[in-house]
Image (cartoon, rainbow, N blue to C red; front, top):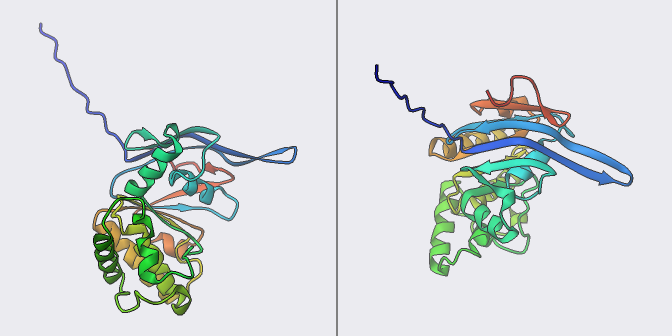
Length: 238
């Protein structure tokens, strides 16, 4: 009787975190920001990483963004281990694949809104004319086309957050990382920002948001909860 061969399709996740650890040295004491984490995120998801201050969530986000070398484990994006790349290769990878919305906006105060948004394109080789067109287009998308020549301190907190989002998405990266994107905003402005992130996700971007606020986590499709440097039971990879 002839044997029947069955082909099993291997499912690859957009992001895989395997055995991740991060330790810091404080004098003679080793502090473990991340003790052990394993989870995955699929293409097109909107995932919230939730946890209290000191739980390791912001450290995790910085590692996922290629900004903070882990002490152990793997950080895979499209099966590529970020921390096996050279620092130059990792910078190029971030420019193409990852947009980051920082908690404190990190806008350059002496540059206009338009100039701030153009910053990620500085190393791309895109022509100055095309950079300007892309910046204008993304500012229109976030509702700031009438304020692109203002300085950051001439904007409200919500408007500055929109500039930070525009800067993060101007290169159209497939992955968007957001660190407490509504942490400094009132409830009404927070809702506007979260709806904008939802819209970006519906348009195809994978959104990963760190927060300690349950009100903002409801906008995502899945929650990964971290506590004391670990994922809690049932919150990580299935």
